[in-house]
Image: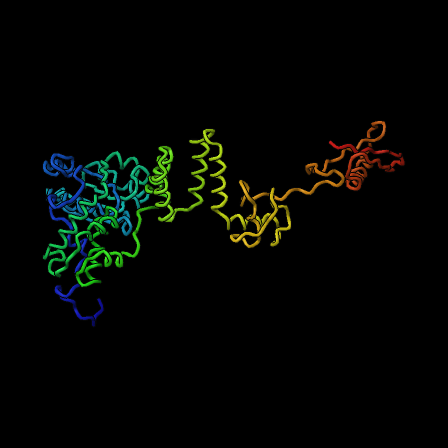
Length: 437
């Protein structure tokens, strides 16, 4: 704070976001994840019996990973130390470990170290936890949205248990929104906000199982429209649904696997849904086209030979601009003066230079320009010029001087069946025959 800034009193500070204010304060307020914290389930029994252990909470955003870690520390009476893998490193880890060892030596509280986005740590940073988790100096609770099998070291996984959190159902999201709208202490009850009957269902569908996202949508809608939560106001606040997807992570492979399974099950509606889902989320069409070629080749095969041809046509049409550049480079001229393939170029609206006018399977595929044909042999394929073997008449051994002259004559003769006379340094005449090797 600057020296001349006016100090801000606690009552005038801006309120926290609605999602943070509505964070559950006890296990009974947690909605969802009943397979972990329901009556008699693993995490509830561990908390009730005081047997805390290191764990990794794996799940999509807004499913309660941070909330569960905080409630575990509260129920167990342990010291809770939040830790961000994005902002901290090994130095901060050592400081937390030293404080945990001091508390343990004094017989004080146990320390729960909560590491958010633990997959951001590299191998060396993750290895720094190993001896302290092994001895029980601290209880490590890591939260991640990525698959721990890929992002967390095997040595650390063997010392922790991995619990998977599921996206919240539509009914769970609706109950959270209703609680937030009615709560006058932490929620929107004091603002007098009202909602239409189906407004919460719409928010639940748009949030896609993310409780934090649903509460943010509700908060923004109430702020922009003076407490009137209608379907039109919700769509205006959201603008566009944010799809949970990543191009190289877990959701990427989940969705392409769903597309494959729908095709194997002969479900066209499901296949079209997953295809549109991937394209809408920003997936590269070229990647999907390649996977369809693989599916047509391996899964369909000879059951329908036209499937592979159709998939290859889709692959060729999914990258027109790339093929234009490849054709231009291979031809060596802007006008594509070289050979372009089996079909001649024609005008096309996608490609102004006419390289995508071919029809059928070869449309848009890069084809190398043909080699020039040898004169006098129409239709024969081009071959590399043969190196002639020079032999003197009567197969006598030529001397070094004649051999050097023969090499020079080879460059002049160049072809097969030509006879050349050369006079060597010893004034002996040799008749050299050129024969291709």
